[in-house]
Every structure is written in C-alpha cells, then in structure tokens.
Image (tube, rainbow, N blue to C red; front, side, top):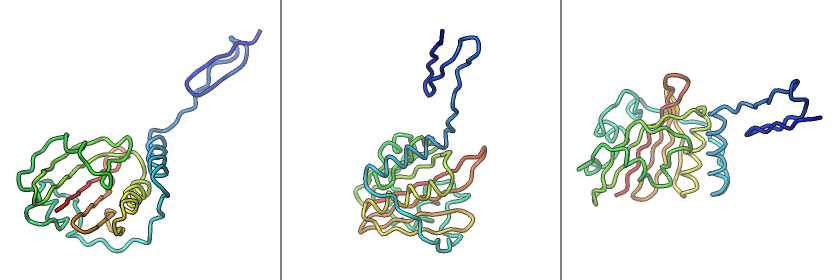
Length: 188
C-alpha cells in the first residue's frame, strides 16, 4: 500500500514508514522579491537600472534622524514638513510612486497634508537585496511617468521627479542582512 502525504508545497509518495514529508524552504527574501516583481509586471514592464551617477554626501539620508534633516537633504521646499506628525498611519498613505515594497517592515513614518506641500517620509526594512529594492523603486517612478535617475556611493538613491512632485528612495545596508529604505515623497 502507498500513502500520500500533503504539505503546503510538496506531494510525496511512498510507504508511510519510509517517506517523511519533504518541505521545500523558500527564503523570505525570495518571496518578497517575487511579490514585488509580480506587482511591477501587473502595471507594465520592469525597468533595468541605468549606470549609477555619483551620489553627493549632502544628498544622502544616512545618519539623519529628524524629518527636517531628511527633507533638507532631499531638497524639499520650505513649507514641506509644516504641521507634520509622526505616525505609522502615514505609511498607509504613500502614493503609488512611493509605495513600500511587498513584505516591507515599516520602522518610522511621518507626514503632513499641508495644502502648500503634502509630504510623506517612511523608513522600512526589506529582506531583498539592494539591486532588487533599487529596481522596484526605479520602476515605480518610471511607471508613474516621472523622470528617474539612479545615484550611488556608500548608499544608493533613486530619484524621481515630475512637475510639482518628487520621490526619493535611499537604500542602505542594515543589521541582520536587511536593507533600510528611506522613502521621501512630496507634492506641492
């Protein structure tokens, strides 16, 4: 007699005493990357990254902790950040061009709906590698018909601009094999 063993991702045949269910381990980073690629493909094609331009030190968000410091480094107009508050709720209010990657783990969020300049700043962790995170944010900008560029130095930066709007996504290595993504978006 042959027994059939079912698991979430394997079908194994054999005698019960000889066949232990085999499970195929899928890495969380692969799941996150695949979910991101599916999302991008549903909206169009996935863009290849261009050769990176040099990232200037004053363009980087590394070591910055306050909303004003990040907005200044991003080149945001002065009214951006007026009346801003810290709340994870802002992460749920990101526009599609500044979407958080699937499986992204939000660490900080702030924003404002100031009529003179609506702003969102979100920091999240991701398990995907730097290239996948860059490609995700580059493609999001391109699909939204923004002018998109890629800069690199100690960290990597995607910059997307369109009349009255700007999105920046800086990707940096974090602890425990994760990447920290700082997303900034404003519209005025």
